[in-house]
Length: 161
Image (cartoon, rainbow, N blue to C red):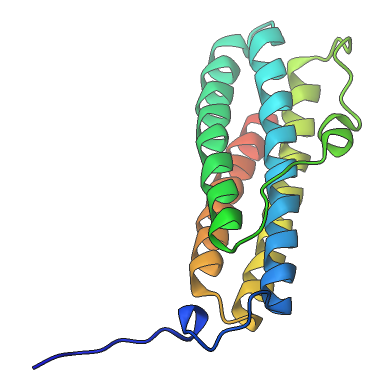
């Protein structure tokens, strides 16, 4: 007995560029840029935090930037799997980042918290776009990443309390 499986996304009848794929890839590109931006910001906090919160912040930020750096590769590879070019928007990556800012640990926590919440919301929107576009793989990826950012936000919120 032979079983033939045919997936519509990869069928011979599929068009070369599906407009839904463009919307998903564009949303993924925004997530990629925001992820790299948050990696840079988190790394800067990791290096520069001082005071009584040094050790727990140093440890937490290392866990976060390590995870996000690996995730950026997964997001970029998904963009490529959709047939689009993976790229980031450098201007948006550095927008609002001040390398000379002398922030307190509490200010760092609140800034990172805000960024994780923003990225989480962007990922929830990506889940919707992917589901509407019939792309469960991207929807799953975005759901997993949103869960990471929700947990990071929770940890930062608890730290700031």
